Image (cartoon, rainbow, N blue to C red):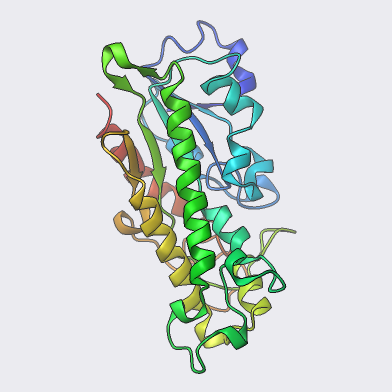
Length: 290
């Protein structure tokens, strides 16, 4: 499978016509970079490139600047917009999306000075007297706001696909939209160069006792997994690859500060980790293509 950047398209001899399937991709750091310098790690799409399917292509609009972006900003990316439903639009055989992970991280880092319905975590005085579950640390009103945001953004993408050349009602064809869930990271002080750490900053900011750090991380990413699986729709041709359910990764050692297990840092995988996920993702995509 070839991976091309949007600016490479004008130089392709014959354009994209020679490929069997043409995918448009947008996303967060699982589709771009997860470490600085960039060559210190990999990403999910890069590992798809290692497959033997040389007659398919992904035009990847994710880039380094997307590592902390929100989905609503992704949709306005000039490259993605232009290729999906903008000035240089064209029909795509599928749309690949890596979204929700960085939004969850950003929401967990909203400072405690904000009202509880605008943040994911509760301040110490807002929690049960003796919290014992991950949910004891989560603002339910904040989670509902986040969930509504996630669902609204996916709906927006579906609507844009349906008003683009990638939807041909006369042929009964809608380009499938593929998303993925995320594995639950080990909460630890393992940054990516000058970036991060992420969950570690959140739990320390909200004064979560260290023995409960992982409870909180598992709760948040478990909820995100359920939320992403919940947007799957056969009628809308939205398919969600349950990465965390289909692929077993080696967890990072608690307290480690660098690469550990299949994790390069706190929230990004090593090349080996991405390779494990990519292999299963490729089979999932193939299973939903004609």
